[in-house]
Length: 141
Image 1 (cartoon, rainbow, N blue to C red):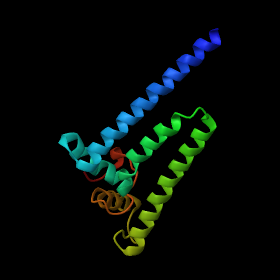
Image 2 (image 1 turned 90 degrees about the vertical axis):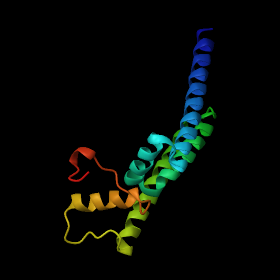
Image 3 (image 1 turned 180 degrees about the vertical axis):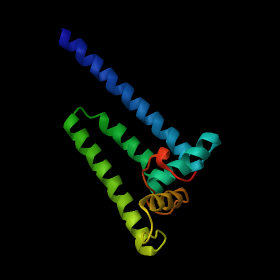
């Protein structure tokens, strides 16, 4: 009987996690796609600077992850989560490489921090893949 109660609690925890992920993905969709309110106007360029145009894929991926969480197969869920993460990293790398080859992001005769700042600025404008960086190490605002 103790097992049955524990299994029910686990099922409730998964249901709560699914509901939270669905609500969070809908909220992110509203904030990112429409840039509504002061949070949306601040969040969209910041996510663009960090991830570039990938910011538009994240809410959809979160919604799909919530759907996959309803399956009882934990191994299948982890496999799909890894696929999603690798997909996002590959797309970001491809977009950054494309910006270098196009000439929008010049890396010659520059320090690494200058290249990162340029990539962040391009990402804010929805050009390229953005860059993941720490704001504490930034030389410009």
